[in-house]
Image 1 (cartoon, helix red, strand yellow):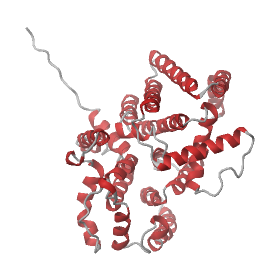
Image 2 (spheres, one colour; image 1 turned 90 degrees about the vertical axis):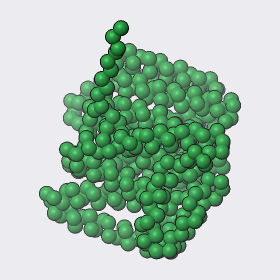
Image 3 (cartoon, helix red, strand yellow; image 1 turned 180 degrees about the vertical axis):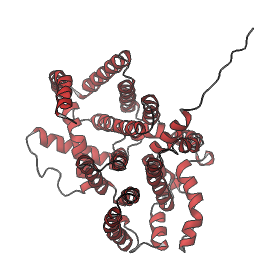
Length: 425
C-alpha cells in the first residue's frame, strides 16, 4: 500500500475513532445484560445503514453478528445449549485474566495452564473487560471472532470470482448451521478455522509473489495452529509443499527450500507421532488405530469394527471413513433435537457437495488456485476421517473444511441461469 493510499484510509476512518472510543467506555460502565443489548442495537443500526448504502458485505456481517448475539441471549435465558467442561474452563480463565487486567496486573495471572488455554483466555479477556464478567460476554466474543471466517472466505473467493459471488459465498458460510453453532460456544474450533484459512489465504498470495507481509501473516497463523492443534501442522506442510512445487516450475531452487522444510518436519512428525497425538510412538497403522479408538467413546461412535492392521487397511477404509466424517450423523443415528439439527445440516452439506464438481470445472483456468484449495481440503478431510470415529467430534473438526466445500459449491451455482417462463392465461 502506497503512502497516498495510507493517508486516504486514515482520513476515511479517523472520524470514527472518537465515537468508537466513547462507545467502548459506555459498554464498560454498563451492566453485562444492558451492554449486550446495546451491542445488538448498534449492530442492527450498522446493518440497516450498510444495506441502504448498498454495502452488502457489511450488511451481511452485521446480520450474521446480530443473529449470533440473539442466539446467545436466547440461550442465556432458556439454556438449550449444553455447556461442556472446557467451555466453563475457558470462561473462568478469561474472567480471571480480565479481572487482573482491570486491576493493572498483566503477568502471572493464569498460573500453570496449557498454552492453548492461555491463548484462548487472552483472546476472550477483552470482551469480558468491555461487556462484564458474564459467560454471555465470552460467547459474544467468540461470535464476533467467527465473523473472520466469512471475511476470509470472501477474500479467497475474490481471487477468482466477482464481488457479488464472493459476498454470497461469505453469506452461506456465515449462516451455515454448524458454523453458527460453533460460533456461540466458548471453544477453540472457530479460532482454529480462522488460523487455517488465514494461512490458506497467504499461500494463495504466494502463488503470485512472496512478500514479507504474507510471510509474517503465515507465521502468525502457524504459531496459532501449533498452539491450538499441533496435528494441523501437517496441513500447513501440505500447502507449503504445493506452493513450492508450483514455484519450482520457474525457479527450481524452490524445490531445495521445500526439501529443507518438508523432510525434517515429516521425519519429526513420523518419528514422534506420540508428541503430536498422544498415541503410539512412531507413525504406523497401530498408532493410527490407537488414536482413532482413543476418540471412540459415548453414543456417538461409528465404524467400531474397522481395525488398522496394515497400511492397506488404512487405504481401503478411507472412502467409507470420509463419507462418515463429512455427513454424519445419518438419519438412523439421530436420537435428539440437537442431533436432528446437526443431521439436517449434514444433509444440506451433501446437497452442496453435488455442486462442487461444477465449481471445480469453473476453476479449470486457475489450476494453481484450485490445486491449493484441494490440497488443503482433501489432505485435511482424509487425514481427519482416518482417525475420527465419533460423529460429535467429526462435526466440530469438519468445520475447518466446510467453508471451502461451500465456496466451491457457490462458485458452481453462480453460473447457473434459471429461465422462468410464466404461463400465459
